[in-house]
Length: 88
Image (cartoon, rainbow, N blue to C red; front, top):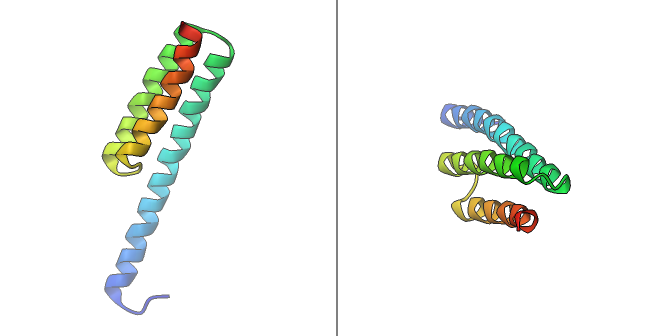
């Protein structure tokens, strides 16, 4: 445990950020699973809707610093590729 007040404060801030980031990452996984499930059911409209929602959340996470911008781009690309395979 830290003895210095500034480090104690930093630890508190880091813990709050960790919990916030954890919930965002969890939601991203949920959105990605929704896209994958829609693709598996070969429902193109549902897959497109799920993809739009997932891309929006990924962009938001990247803008908040939860994900690196290239990681966000890679994830969006992979999901889009899955949807494109069933769309045509």
